[in-house]
Amino acid sequence: MGHLALHYGTPGDGPAASRLLQIAGLKETQVLPLPQGNFYRFVVNGGHFSRGDGIVYLSCLPEAQQKLIAAIHEALRVGTNDEHDAVKGYRAMMAQDFEASFHFGFLVESLEELEAMVLKLQDLSENDPTFKGRLNIGMNRARRGDAEVDARLDASPVFGKATRYAYGAAGVQVFVETDLVRAGQLGENMYFEFDYVFPDRASHILSVVEL
Image (cartoon, rainbow, N blue to C red; front, side, top):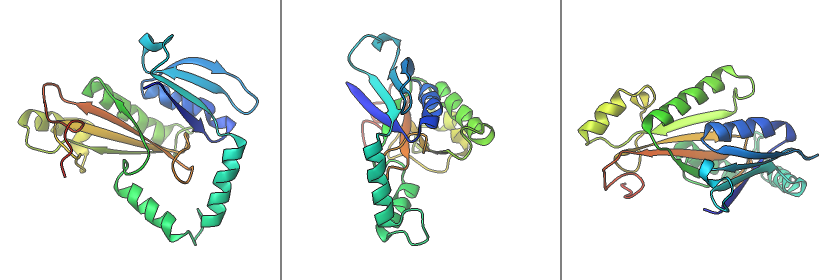
């Protein structure tokens, strides 16, 4: 990956959006104050600081894009009691499957790291006024059939409670839906995916899709 450009909605959301990306594992390397909101640069790890790849940029939605989103919302009556049927259908699809539309996926190095991140985000969502009501967290555990994987996930403080299963074996997925970062067809929410794959398995959620 060269780089990915993300946007937050209003200048006041910049610091919280940056903090979310850092919790996700990105390393913040630059904050450039601008009148329309801070511009941030991140890298996937410290080894990419001066490289031209593995970069994520974060800035405030440009005014022209904000106006376009507002026009779409007005035309489709988004957020009203009379939303267009297409909007209702899109929302229903995303409620069933976080990864059905545009999303940004991370591969996490250890299951323990992923579990710690989820517990932190759950705590922020429940107790931090900045994040409260702005994070929707879901998860899929690996399909059953590998005794070692099943036992580890049954004992997990995060995945032991999961009722949804991934499209494959030997891996788990965590999804974070948030309006701190804006994207998607309606310009409302961004979906982040965090994956862990158990080692020494040739067939796993990111190598073979199972229906």
